[in-house]
Image (cartoon, rainbow, N blue to C red):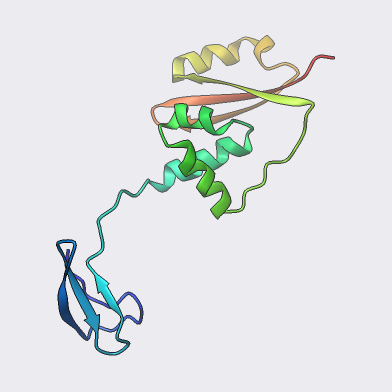
Length: 139
């Protein structure tokens, strides 16, 4: 990977300054900042970040989101902290969820008993759909 600009000041005036951990080190001529070639890391697609935050707001736990999306629960916690997401607290409702394909989703909505007395949200999840349903706790 070729370094074009100084990550500190953005200057393109740099000189080589040795090798550290088998990576070329550079020194910026303008700000005297030392830097090396950036590692190419894994970047998780924004789709998964948005879906995990959405599912968190819908009431799912970190581990449930991890099982559904295949993203680490620690990453999900970090995104929630980063974007300062606060889940509204309401103890009288709890979510249940199902993952269905398009045909199963159509059959689910044909039965009126499935959607009576509850809020329902359907969201796309890859080639399937996730149905989240809120029901009141029975006293």
